[in-house]
Image (cartoon, rainbow, N blue to C red; front, side, top):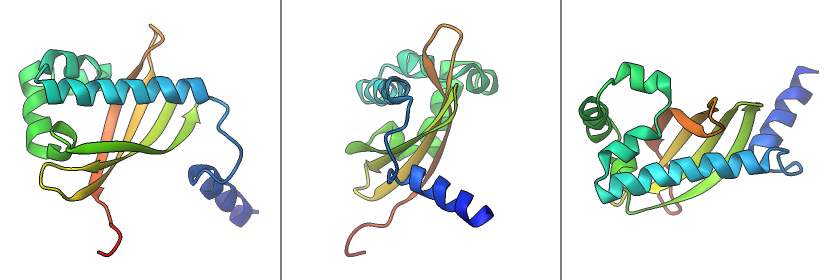
Length: 139
């Protein structure tokens, strides 16, 4: 039974099963991610900060503190050469995980997994980002 559940979860995550029922929610989450990245690229730090969920804004209560964290720990997200959305998964009716493939400013491939939560105002805000180097073809 556990093996079947694990296989079903893996199939959903890899996009093998039918489309996730919350397609509109996933598009909304992707819009928030893309808007934040665009704000980073345009140097609009206040706008980029506005896409961070309240839990992140509590940890980094000023735009300056938030940007210091991003610039020091998330260079590929802050200044990507390009990015593309990968698999997404609705973790709950109010939480989405979204994989983003990024080419960083150093030209290397990275994978970022964003988590986003639906806010009371109906928008998705970023609750966390996990970043790691990604394998590339021929590497």
